[in-house]
Every structure is written in C-alpha cells, then in structure tokens.
Length: 151
Image 1 (cartoon, rainbow, N blue to C red):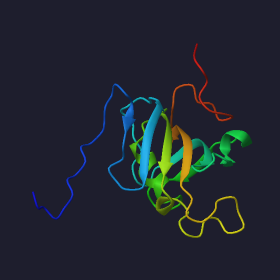
Image 2 (image 1 turned 45 degrees about the vertical axis):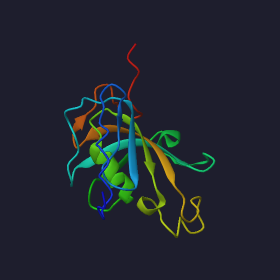
Image 3 (image 1 turned 90 degrees about the vertical axis):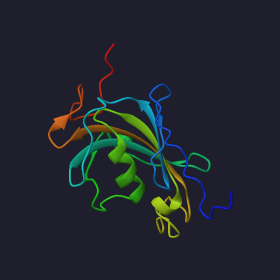
Image 4 (image 1 turned 30 degrees about the horizontal axis):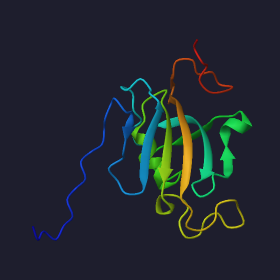
C-alpha cells in the first residue's frame, strides 16, 4: 500500500477499561471516576471544577484548586483556559474525575509561564473533577470542596 496518508487510529473508547483518547492531537483523557455519562459541557457553559496540575516530567505540582479549597470556575470553549482543557474537559460528564495528559502545544507552549512554575515546552498532567455545569451540580458536590465520598 503506497498511500500518502497514515491510517487513522481506531477510536479507543472502551467502557470496560474507562479510557477515552480525545481524537485530537495534544490531549488524552483517562477516566478515574465515571460521571453521570449523560451530562456533558457545551461551548459557552460555565463550569466549576477542582484540579491539580503537575509537570509530566518529574511530577512537580505547580497549581491546585484542591489545596486552596476553592473550586475553579470558567467558561468552556472560548479560550479562557489552555487548549488542552477546552478540548479535554468537553469530553467529561458531570461528576467525572479524570486525568488530562496535555502536550506542551495544548498547554503553555514554547513560552511556558514566564517567571512562573511551568518551563517552556512542558507537557502537563491535570487531575480534574467536573463539579458543576452552570447550576447543574454533581451529586454530593458542596460549594466548599469536591465530591463527598459516599460510603
């Protein structure tokens, strides 16, 4: 076969191993705890999330809303956050906790965060939890923290 284009990889959405690779270069989402699997964010929705960001190389933590005890709110899909979040978080359902593995081109790129904790061309890992989409809150979410463990 002398095709000029490499074959497209098969989609890897498999419910039994809870891994979903976002079909866009630069972001991979691994589900840690499933959400409701029916309520997904749309462009322009205000989201409330908890996150912990670490450098893929070495695992040094650079930011965490969990440590601050205050969830992060933003509007999805309009460039308020890095491209890796805009694309990866859109694949999450309400209440889901996931790991987003984001290549530098979908993160802070060649500049990193000047004078900050993220070096140039750094790949990033974010453990993220989708707590609310607008006024629609995940079961067990309270404003002060993340989801309560239901035992």
